Image 1: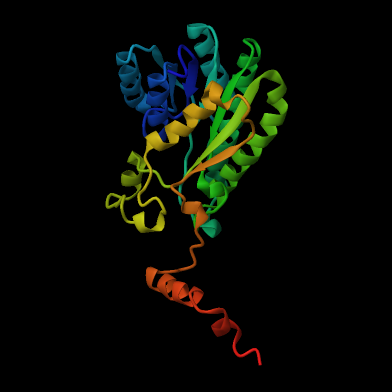
Image 2 (image 1 turned 45 degrees about the vertical axis):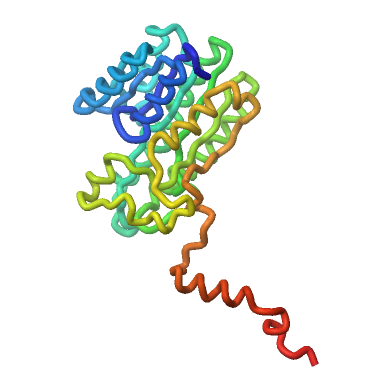
Length: 280
């Protein structure tokens, strides 16, 4: 119960990683505002809120498009009106369409940047203004491994997530003196509902061999990192980006198959004289 009676907002919390974060915050004692973007996502958001109330915590749902500053401000105002303050802001809402760079339109680019980058800015700004009035708080950004290492068709998304990482460091400098810690969690591959929407034949185990820990992650893995940043245990942690990817980002992926790795290991086991040849 590290977050007993804290008040939290989690954006994009109707499903996936956001849902996992919201439920874990509630398990740790927080009362949680479940944000969702449009009217059609109300039912899923309410399902999460119902689960939280069943734990004995308070929870409301608030519809807000995080790319719209006025809607974000209204969400924070609703939270403060209902609970009296805001202690924890988790900026989870995001979109990641896979679009080739040469085919991406201005409209598509704006959509990705607006939701992912501007959305984090607006949420952090509105939350910080509320936290200033009550002595401080915790802001946790959710970026992505794509902000550091990426692949094809993710240009706008990777740029936005890289921007979130940079914004985390900047806000830590600006808000730290006000007792507001700003940190970021960068997830790797996570098994969520949208994977099956994008690909009905999605196989969560297809890339297990590429992940050092041996499996894809789940929302609870990300939620654990968020709880740490939101808790008093992270009092002296500020401006950090924590990658939660099972070790994926530690690897150099240049088409190195297990067979090739075996060959490399055999070479490494050669004696020094085999490497250097006859010194005479």
